[in-house]
Image (cartoon, rainbow, N blue to C red; front, side):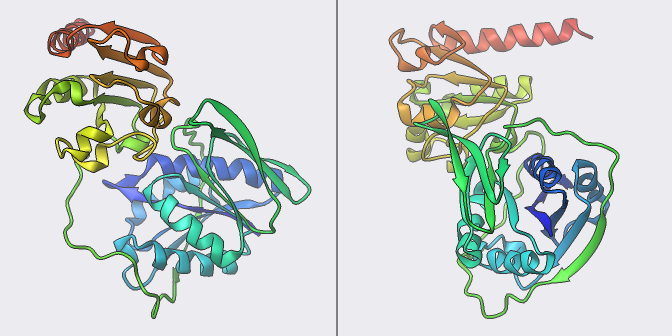
Length: 327
């Protein structure tokens, strides 16, 4: 028996969220006196698989199968069911990202497994019952959820724990999954390469976000410049994405991507509860807004009441000056 972890690679390296999930699985495996098996797409470069061993995996199963590289959740759920049965895994861990949220419920149905989605704490075992913490009431509280089923699935909220790499290593075992005849749910129409300069939102430790206070999409230059100087990932509020000022993959909030960066800078965002629900796990929140009554100020660690078109360029210039003085 082992603890199974679904992992991914991007831009020539194992994703940070995957390494975090393997660390998390290693903690569970220690409680259960077992080991961690990581599962990854069979087309992943073998040269980067060593990081999974350093994160705590003892074995890496590289899975091949018809069209798995498309990221189709129906195909992956079938493939992971076969891996879980072959490995005798009763606990399966995912990152609570786009792939994890898509695959985990499908796999849960197949395995008749209980699920805790978006966990933020290490689980505690009491016999066969696993209890794990997750946020509730849009992040205003923490609740304990218990899984009583024999098979258990947890999706881990990204950036809940720091990644720790040791000196461990893992054996690599190829496997071909039988997904022929499985009706896929994804049609790939176009492929675009994401810039490797910044981290994807779920993994980002620094995020610069903006809302309707920017007035028009052509004004986003000052937001992007601040993000570039900080080495941050850009994000936006839902209205901005709905108006197509920014791409939908930048939308953070209750109906978008939930993030937990070390620093979240919100520019021209009022701070509606739906937005706060996706970002209030941030370690430090900085709000820049002309409206001193904006709800976001109640959740901010630091607040600047002022015009973004005046404040943001000055902030960017100050950061550039500070960085220059360090060299």
